[in-house]
Amino acid sequence: MSNLAKEDTTMAKTAGTKEQPWSLKTPSGTAEYTMYKDETHNPPILVCTVGKTVLHYDLRCITDLHEMLKKRGDWMDLGSADEQKPAKEGTVEAWGRSAANPVGGWYGLKKGLRGRFGMYLPPLMEELGLVELEHNAKNNRMRAK
Image 1 (tube, rainbow, N blue to C red):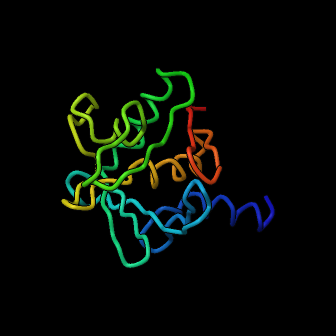
Image 2: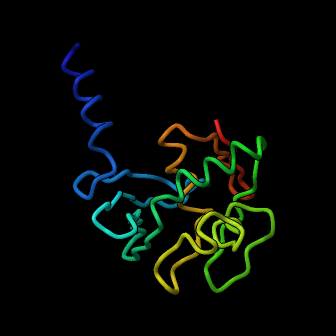
């Protein structure tokens, strides 16, 4: 194995830590942010930093959303919205706060900053190779791979 290949393997294993977070862009490509796993929390969380704003999402949201998308079998609108605004029905955002999802409500954990699930989770899932994601200026969709 070449040194470059060894570095790539090491990067994949260490990415997503506080020391080496995933560096991501929103689906439209207009904003950059970072995410990492913090498994010391109960429940384990994803820490999402956008500028100076820090959001927390239940870590299980990755698996739960992927499972839902696989069962759906088709594209789903992202529908990102702040916590204080209603989410468009039938979107990833609406599912991420629905009483019908596996956690029975919000995957976002910081009161007042629980929204934007449909903005920040899809690029991470694309980075992890779990979904296909559109990158248009507006009205993006995702589906499970």
